[in-house]
Image 1 (cartoon, rainbow, N blue to C red):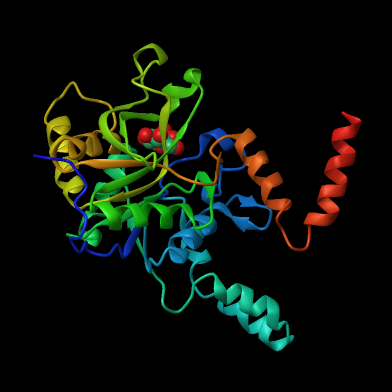
Image 2: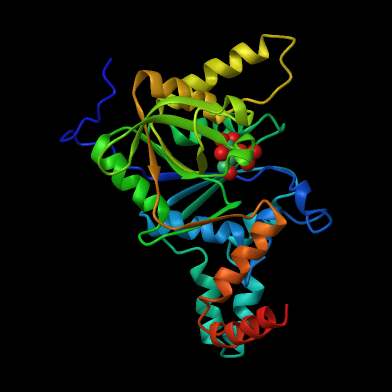
Length: 307
Ligand code: G1P
């Protein structure tokens, strides 16, 4: 079958976003011993809120969180904080009240499903399959702190609307870093969008087909669920299989059947799963923060000069 993008066909809208958040966050211990890593703040907002805001700003209204045992604070964050709101109302703190309420707009719905065992990103997405149904959907990894204008997910949705194919965000990484990422290769069109021909999860640098790495934004057609179910079934019926069910493997199968596009997005990305990335995101965000940017920039320049 041809994988050429099919223009002019109306493609079903993407209404749902999946946030896999069951991971333990061991790279951030001790901070994550009793708190979810997704609740770590970049300046004054938890990581997960940036990702949810990106999905909302891209037109998505149904947020599906794939959670684990220690993730209750994420549910509370997107719920009404009754005592807080009552207190802010009583004391006339209207701006703060509006801020607290804006976290979960009335037209946004949040649903939660558990991933009972840490069997990988593909397994996390499968945990949401009944909530996703037979619709295209987005996946956002909150650890990947991504900013763009338009938002990175909106850029992917634009490409999905043009091609009707699944679309994933990619960027170039250093050769020695390829073993931390899903890596793709294929032919780029005039706009730089790659029609994926090869895809491999975390290859050794000498085996990697390119330096083009998948970063945490995906728009996927529902057929990926079928592929993931098949991969999971094979894995679970093989007693020797102890590994994870990779989302990349499901998408690689889609690339061979329906076609998958890799979009080198416009914007920035920090790996907030790492301490260095978290610090970089914090500095970036502080330099854009209405209240802080002037004072922070002054301090940063003086600090840099003293190093
Ligand atoms: C996951 C994906 C990988 C992707 C990465 C982006 O890996 O499996 O393909 O490149 O996210 O951050 P993880 O970082 O969860 O190990």
